[in-house]
Image (cartoon, rainbow over all chains, first blue to last red; front, side):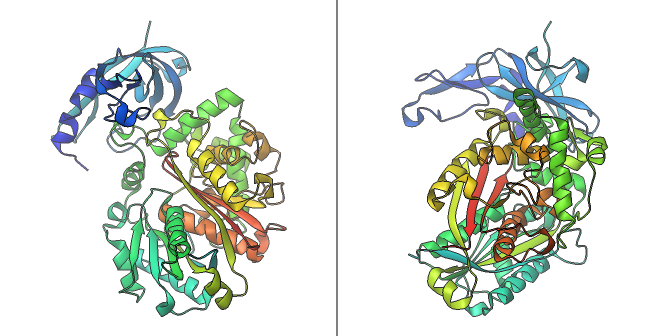
Length: 133
Length: 388
C-alpha cells in the first residue's frame, strides 16, 4: 500500500538527522522521539536532542525472506544497534558481508535510500549503519 | 459480581487453508458448535466478544462484531470486537471473563477468527507486521521472523541456547499436532528437516515459523450459578492477567526475557493461588520456535536460560514433566491469529475434561494458556482448572 507523502515528510528530521528527544528532568534520551518521558511522565520536560549516529551492534539477523518493497535488497542484515547515547534502534547494516557482523562491533550511520513507492512514487531515505573503521 | 466464571462450551473449525469457507462462515460454524456443546439456546446469550486481528486487511471487512452477531442470528445483543494483534483471541476471552465476573452478563460468547489465505502471502505479511512498530521497525525492513531472530540471537549468545534446542521445539509441536485432527500441519518433522529447511531470518528457518492459516474458535462463559445449572463439567477460569510492553522490540529492557509474560504470569499465579509447579500443562504462544523457549522461562517452568535444555531433555513433550502445547501449538496446529487465544482455551478445556484423545496429558487438572501479541508487547494469560 502506498502511503501518503506526509507520513514520511513529518518524520524527516528523525529519519534524516537522528533528531530524537531527551528529558531535561531525568536526562533520559529517546530515539525515536517521545512526547512523554516514561520515567518522569508529568514532571518530565522533553526537548529535542540530536544523536551522534555512533553505536555498536547488539543483535543481528540476515533477512532472506524480505517484506514487500525490500525484495531487491535481500538478503540484508538487520540489526538492533545500541547507540552511544543509550537508546537502541533497528536498522540495516550495509557495505559489508553478513560474515563480518558480530555483536559488539562499532557502527555509524550512513544516509541511504530505504524504500521506494514503486517506480513513480516517492523515494524514502533514512539512516542505515556501516561498520566503523 | 459472579464469584467464579466457568467455560461451559467449546467449538472450533479445523485449522487450515479453508478455501470453501468465508470469514463469517468460520466463526459462525465454531460458534454453533460451542453453543451445542454447552447445550444452551441462542437467546440465553447476553453478549459476545470477537477477537480478530486484521479482518480489514485479510478479508476487506471491518465492523465484524455486528457482522458476527448478525450471521449468528443474534443481532440485537451487545457485541464487541477485540484487537491485540496475535493476542486478540486471548484478550477477547479476558473481556468476556470480565463481563461475567462483573455481574453485567450471565452467559457470554468469546470467539476468535482470522481468514488469512484470501490474500497473497506478501499481503498477509504486511498485515501481520502491523503488530510491530510500522515507523521504526517495518520501515527498516523488519519482518516478524526477523524480530524473533534478533531475540533468538541474544538468547543463544547470553545462555548458550543452540539451534538444535530451538529446532526441537518445532519437532515436538509437530509430534503433538500429528495427534490433533484439527491441526493445519498434522504431520511429523525430523530435527534434520527443521535444521535444513530454507532460511527465513538467520538463525530462524521456515520450520521454526508458524504459517498462514484460516480458522475460528469459540468458547461459552457462564457465571458460577449458571455454569453449575447448565453443565456437569464446567472448567473454571482461575485467573486472567494481561500485561503490555513497548511496541518496538528495540525499546525492551531485554531481548532474551519477555517482560510482559513475566508480569502477566506473576499476577496469574497470585490470583489463582498456585505456583508454576502446580500447572499440569500449558499452551504457549510458539509463533516462532524461540518464542516457546522464551515463554516457558518467563512462565517460570524453568530458570532463565534453561528453556532450550528443558526442551531437549523431552520435559516439555506430551509425557514430560511439563507438557507444552499438547495441541501442536501455533506451529503445528496453525495460527489463524485472532482465533489462536481461544483455540488455546479450547485445548485446555478438552485436556481438563479428559477428552483430548491420543494427545491427552495424564492427570491434566490445571492448565495455563499464554497468548502473545506482536513481538511481546501484549501478553495475556489464563489459568484454567476443573477444581473451583
